[in-house]
Length: 415
Image (cartoon, rainbow, N blue to C red; front, top):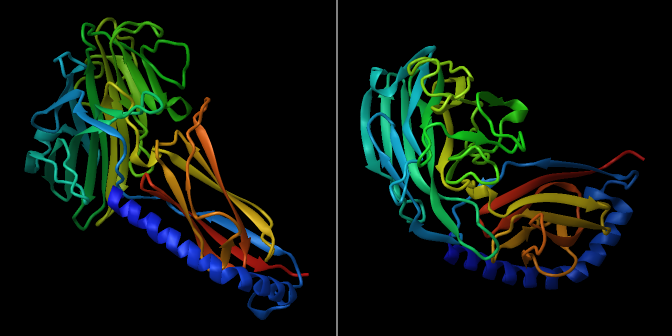
C-alpha cells in the first residue's frame, strides 16, 4: 500500500467514523433495548450468546517502509540459476551457489534438465505500485513445469529504533507451475559452498541450538531455525565477518524442509542426499525443499535469503496479532486488542467493523506507540459492542500493508 493510498484511507476512515458515530449513538440505545427483549432477528432471547471466532488468511499489499535505498550487497547472477553474492567491497560470502532439481525422482542441475530457458537473467519487472526492483529473473520450461527463479536485493531487519533497514541481503525465490495435464513431484536442493571473507571452512550458529558452534549437523523439525548465521571465525561472541541464511520469509513463501551443514562435496554434486559430516576446513550447506506433488494447474512457491543481515518478510514488519475478549451479549462491551511485534516508526492501525458491531469510544484509526523496552511489542485497543447477532468479518488494516481478519459468528444458544 503506497503512501498516497494510505493517506486516502485515513481521511475516508475519519469521515466515515464521524458519520457513523453521530448516527449510531441514539440508535444504539434503541437497538440494545430491542435486542435484549427479542434477541437476534426477532427470535426470543432464551440463552446466552454462543461465540465462534476463526482466523482468515492475512492479506499483504505492498507498503512503503523506511528502507535505505543504497545497496549494501552485490548480487551477480550467472547461468542455470547460479548466483554469486559478495559484499560491496568484493569480499566473498560463498563460492559456488546453485540449485539441484528433483523432478519425479530424477535429480539434475538445471542445465541438464532437458528443458528450454525462456528467460536468462532478465531484469525484474516493477511492482504493481511502480517501484523498481534490483535483481534478475530466469525462467526454465521443463516439459510440464515452468520454473521461475528470481534474485532480488532485499532489506534486512532494522538495526534499532529509528534506523532504516538496509539493502544487505538477497531474496532468492522459486515459483514452479504445472502447465501440463499430469501431476508431477518437484523438489529442490540449493547448494552453497561456504567461504566467509577469509575462511573456506566457515562454521555456523542457529537460535534453535543456542550457545554452540555447529559443524556437521542436520537442522529439521524443532531444530530448523528462522535463520542460520555463517561465521568467519568459530566464535559466537567474536565471529569476525558473517553472513545470514534466512529461512523463514513469512506465510507467502514455503519454508525449507531442512538444512544440512556439512563438508564441501560430501555426497557429490549431482545427488540428492548430502550427509551431515564435519567440515574439516572446507564447509558447505544444502537447503532442502523436499519433493511435493504439483497437480495440473497447481503451483509451488518457496525461497530463502542470503546476505549480511536477516531478511524480513514484508508481512512481518510490525506484525499484528489480533485478539477479542469480553462480553458478546448485545449492548455489552468487548475489547479488540492488537499486539504489534517490532512496530515500524509511524505505523498506524485501522479497525474496520461491520454494521453488526459498533465502536464505543475513540476513532477507528490509531497510531502504534513505539516500545521503550524489550521485547519490542506494543498494544492497541478498541472498546466495542454488539448491535446484532450474525456472522461477519472484523478487520485490522496496518499501514505496513497487512490486513488481519477475524470471522466472528454470534448466535443465541438454547435457554
